[in-house]
Length: 277
Image 1 (cartoon, one colour):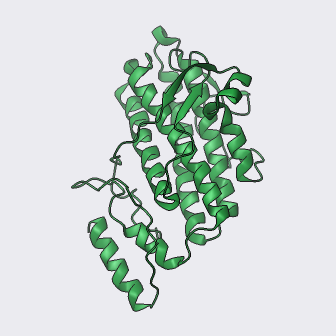
Image 2 (image 1 turned 135 degrees about the vertical axis):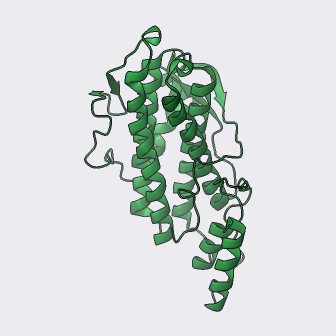
Image 3 (image 1 turned 90 degrees about the vertical axis):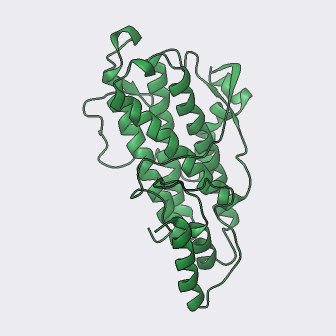
């Protein structure tokens, strides 16, 4: 069943329960291609709208807007690793595939959140540490640090969102960010000698070098002691704001622009079929 058919079925079911509204959700999301797992259609949008007639709260929107910035940053990061980082082309094809799939997933997350806030991300140009895309160790350190921050930010959403639907959605996205953190650590030992590999330890947001053996080294996801979404934004600010980037010692001579696209997820079973999961 396509997402469009799913949306229609959900609509008929919810109308029979006398739960109606007109709030949009996935406005502007990518259309699902034949056999693809793009977001597309309005099934999740209509489902959320009927379950929450007055839409997300102010607090929900603040978390979603921060998440949009994070996802735009993630898309920009993965896009430039794939397009410009010298070590990428020397990775094994399966390691390249990890990074290419992550790009599609992050774009899908962004569109989901844009559909709720009905506006683009507050920041669409980003700064990085010096040698970000030229040096594989810097690239992977930064990538893992970002995924650390994204995981913790979505855990704030799990704690603070006003509805079960949004909390579960945050948890579902957080799980994928956790995959990305682990897979970045999987990639590290596969970096070619010509690119400074194999890389045996990676330093994430907690600024402690951690062995990549095993790559899945968390018993529990790290909250980073973030108490609210403002703390998550603070962690990401050096990537988004020039003065903060300068203070952090980032390279501010070049800003990398977020370039949205229509994603194609790797498989249909892992797509966002509806808020019911």
